[in-house]
Length: 218
Ligand code: DX5
Ligand code: ZN
View: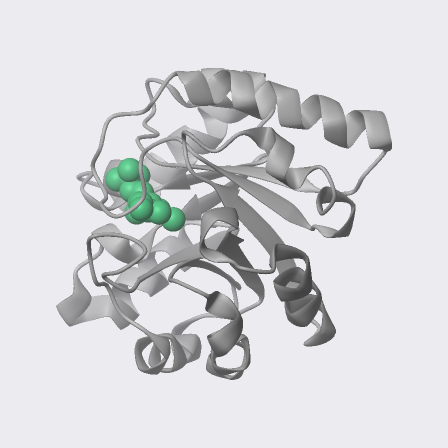
């Protein structure tokens, strides 16, 4: 079954508790939380105090996507704030393998994200340790961008490695996903679908999440 992870980057920040309850009640699987530092990406979103306060609004899995330089400095803070899965960018880590180990040693699930231009080969010696790979299908930093088609080939190539090695590792795809293109993302091998604007900017969040599920399972 495909997992749905709405990105709260597109939510109304003045009403975040309720915005999270909406996706919770609609049956989302993960809450996708985009943390941006204004350095690794050209945008600043929010940090641990916000995550801590929304932790009270839901029991769903917190899927924390760190778009920050040298994330190893903050893993403990994000764990304490309530993260369940932590994703770090391969491009942002000096020592990727040791950052992944740090996340796992805190008892959290670890994922590595790849930007659209980052080759899959950076995963070669770390994928065996991962719970998830995040394939970026837009350049990170902003919601509402256009899906980059070359990510489909990346997804299938990573899926082949995961199946070939018999790994228990999910593929999450993030950026520009809508009801119109989600099926090809799933067909390429995605297990977890992130959607920000397509869910939060829709008329009825509940119906949209149900529609995503139907299209994915068809
Ligand atoms: C982009 C973020 C995404 C973003 C997705 O840097 O990582 O999670 O919120 O938003 P949409 O679905 O609008 O592209
Ligand atoms: Zn994200």
